[in-house]
Length: 322
Ligand SMILES: Nc1ncnc2c1ncn2[C@@H]1O[C@H](COP(=O)(O)OP(=O)(O)OP(=O)(O)O)[C@@H](O)[C@H]1O
Ligand SMILES: N[C@@H](CCO)C(=O)O
Image 1 (spheres, rainbow, N blue to C red):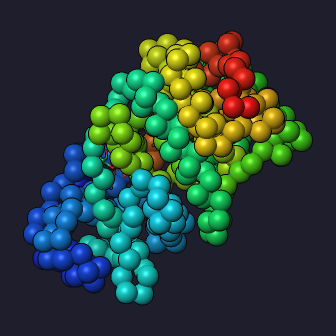
Image 2 (cartoon, helix red, strand yellow):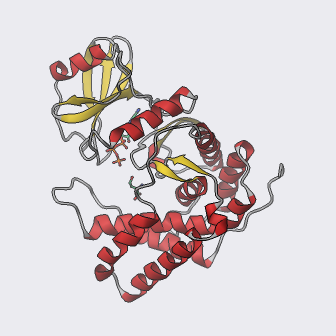
Image 3 (cartoon, rainbow, N blue to C red):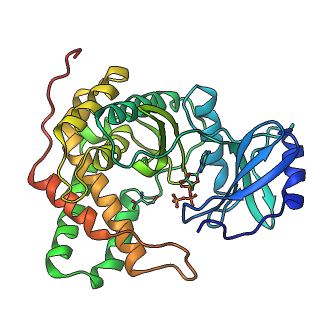
């Protein structure tokens, strides 16, 4: 279910008028997602998505919404929040922060093949470059400081071998973060959660990336690690599929070749990306927020992925054009 707040046509109509999107004809609740209330909205002008934010506040949302607008204006396939005459993209509906964006076509590809991974690599690199001149600042709120703060909360729920793994990986990542090579990594606004269920395809054509609500400023390499760890693995074992991995990396590098420091640190960032989701899933699983609507994902998946990345670090092939 993904309609936590019921919205009537009458309540939503003035917003669509203010946004000059035409007369609202239909609202249909979207049965997916666990964070927000989403509706497909049909007007006499087109198809849109109305989102009521159930977790994020008015103060937190501009970074995400204006980032989507910034990327869309630069040709990246992301939903573009509709603006009113004053350029505002964030509104209040039924007492909740709300926004309207264009509806992306296509559907998620949950069993990606090499061409899908290549499309993700291309779009990710284009997104990184397009975000370079985005002016709003917000760190990745699920980055190293959050892992350090959250780990002690989940230690009591873990067995000895899991706790040892988490402790030693955090020590490793703190050591990496302090290194000159890490400090030299290029960075900017990153999606930070571009999993299979956050991308739309029509056949092998990528039609859109959405769910920017974990975006923040971090290294581009971390974002690449997040994508590889989801798009290029065997989900049952966490093992990297070499063909899909190469397809994603080659396509990324055809747009933006990795720098020497990035090539050196990719194995470490694949570990960081696995750690990030292991910690957040442990936290969601063992310390559910009060009245949370969140159905926790399986934390052991990312424990497996992390152990696998440590046991078999990725070795990069020299790209043809390097
Ligand atoms: N702009 C869009 N165009 C087409 N479909 C969309 C769009 N935005 C959201 N959707 C659909 O709505 C569903 C839920 O959206 P989303 O994933 O953002 O939900 P959420 O509850 O905000 O987040 P989460 O994925 O973390 O649960 C998506 O799976 C997708 O099918
Ligand atoms: N992609 C995250 C969920 C938050 O969007 C996960 O798989 O843990």
